Amino acid sequence: MGIEVVVEGLTKSFGKQNIWQDVSLTLPAGEVSVMLGPSGTGKTVFLKSVIGLLKPEKGRVLVNGVDMVNSPEKDIMEARKLFGLMFQDGALFGSMSLFDNIAFPLREHTRKKESEIRRIVMERIDIVGLIGAEEKLPGEISGGMRKRAGLARALVLDPQIILCDEPDSGLDPVRTAYLSQLLIDLNAQIDATMLIVTHNLDIAATVPDNMGMLFCRNLVTFGPREVLLTSDTPVVSQFLSGRRQGPIGMSEEKDAATLAAERTVAQGHVPAGPRTVVPQLEPSPGLPVRQGALRRRERVHAMMGQLPEAARAAIRNSYTPTPGGGRP
Ligand SMILES: Nc1ncnc2c1ncn2[C@@H]1O[C@H](COP(=O)(O)OP(=O)(O)OP(=O)(O)O)[C@@H](O)[C@H]1O
Ligand SMILES: [Mg+2]
Image (cartoon, rainbow, N blue to C red):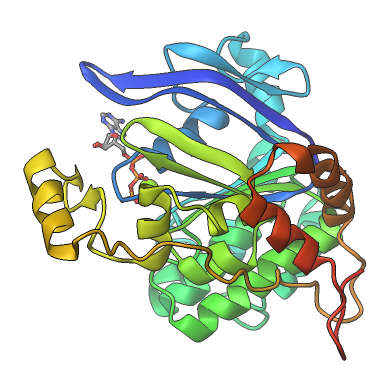
């Protein structure tokens, strides 16, 4: 079963530039979470901080009793083996075949025999649908295939926590839909805790159990998917509807004058109100029920009283069996 990740009061700056401050959230064990946020809000910096590659100046990230920020480096290195990280740019070695790229963490971090490495690598290549492409170089395949190779490489060490940085960037809508299903299927198969950074609204609407958003150096909110999907907080609803009107501008935060001008134009007609929450993806037929989803159901049930009414309604709705379909 996946491992819970607890982030407490995390603050990161580069020199004088503060990226975000006082970020606290818990990634529940075995659940899928999504982090949204405009470009440049520090999502990649957040992932790298969780895994201990960047050092926030304040706060803690607790994984299995290890603080990925402040523990001794050897403990952090050891804990890092629990993670699989799929980088935003794929980060494949251009001169190595896909097979060697995917085998790399095994050759680097384990003493497994080549025959065992081959078995594991081919299994992961199969999961991400790249059978037949293993001898190709990264430059000889499409961007979508490179993404999947990056995911396969993140999976070779049997991670219990998987971090994906914009797994959909550069993919067409159909491939993005396949990828969404792949992420849910993967979660059903290995029950790993997953955090996905994305701008993609379809992924946000259909994949996660939980969702958060970074904006203006703060974590706007983090919680059950229904809370963000029904939120009328201006930044959240603007982002989720992809509108220009709202607090988010090209340089992330619009100045007050632009915002005021917009309000005059809109004359108070900022489209808000509850959006429809589409059903979350289910694992493909034949796969086990997601244990994380079962645990989440109990967890969310216990916190119902603290959630806004729109979120409560969406949650109740999601548990109502639909004719011909249905949820566990
Ligand atoms: N190693 C570094 N040194 C200095 N500044 C950095 C470093 N890494 C990131 N930054 C800065 O931190 C800010 C956040 O970068 P980050 O890559 O996390 O954004 P992001 O939210 O992932 O954006 P995108 O959606 O475009 O990928 C940027 O202003 C970037 O210039
Ligand atoms: Mg990024």
